[in-house]
Image 1 (cartoon, rainbow, N blue to C red):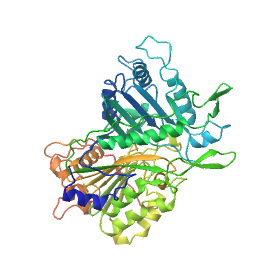
Image 2: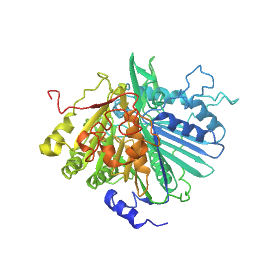
Image 3: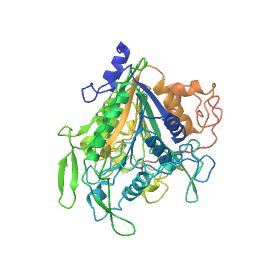
Image 4: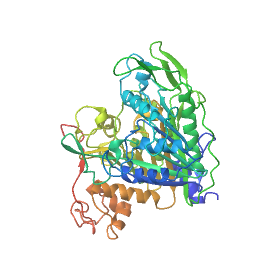
Length: 521
């Protein structure tokens, strides 16, 4: 089915023109978002339960926990089942199971210093999965022995940051992309009060999207490329914790992955989907020799599809831009030509409302003080708000969510465009220093609006009943969540500030913390 005129207009406004390398899938691919790990992991578990001989399970992540139970159980609980045990069982029964773990790129090159970043933990996870014998089968041979690879290719200080789960059952491919790794502390949901960071309350807020139809083929091809690169890497050595040396990747491993089977179109009227990548064109082959090599099969300048898509969508915004992101500041390895501050400034000058939501608690993996200050990050202050006229600054707000690591990488625009993936908002993800994979949607239907309602209700800590839903769906009223003076004329000034205003608003707690311009204000 061809795109309708109104859908075609949304594509032109919010998406870059389709190309052979970055197609747009119009009305033929399913795009279903998941908010937080509980629902997402349950969906993955349900699919894994159906996998049999001749099917496939492909996983890639910054990290994968062999001991993760996808239903949130802990070792010793009745019914507990480790992810590695499930994957080993499926491989034993004849499924094509493969796992790509990110090798810390610095430590992948610094062979004498292998413990930097997540690298050591991933080496140990790979070793355990390769040696895992399924508890449900009578076999002495570990089925994953040659099916778990460490991908330490990439730029000097970057990481292979893509999070992918692909499941092929009877020829049908289901693809997941997003910010969620298959890791123990990702199994969380609102109101995010089940976990602790030390003695303090802590939660993990994240997202993913499920793709079926031709768009899922595209994700498979990205994984196929990644597997081929990782399988061809030299056999680097690493230092065992008790002394001695080990090999990063097994000597015998499948060097290629078959192409995805052609996927039948899905009925997705009024929606167009694209799957977008970030790849730096260069990889560090040996830090000691400072030798760079080109990634095979990529354009000379690299791949910046995420940046092109997000910058174009923000430049097309008319009403609002909503961003959830872990950092909202720059990190080493980015490039100023590939940052999104310019599009944000231009949108604010046009009168577009800019809402930025970030973490109240730092990701423990990043180190440092757990609680993040309720002030604008220096990059937002100097590269966005500080460069706007004072009367325009009111169009930009930022909030932190108390006691929560906001790990989502979500951008929503005008209730018509959504993007979910692994790419953080900073230049490092846009330029491809961290390899990334995201999926964007434009729609004439309610999918983006419904995702916005769910996300904003979660941060408001309120349930959405029949009375409240129309108020959250109404964009003019809902934007008043973030600034009182964004409420429509005549609205009660206590709207979203007091229970019962609007009708049905019943927050269980207040966790949204508005940030100040600087520590002195």
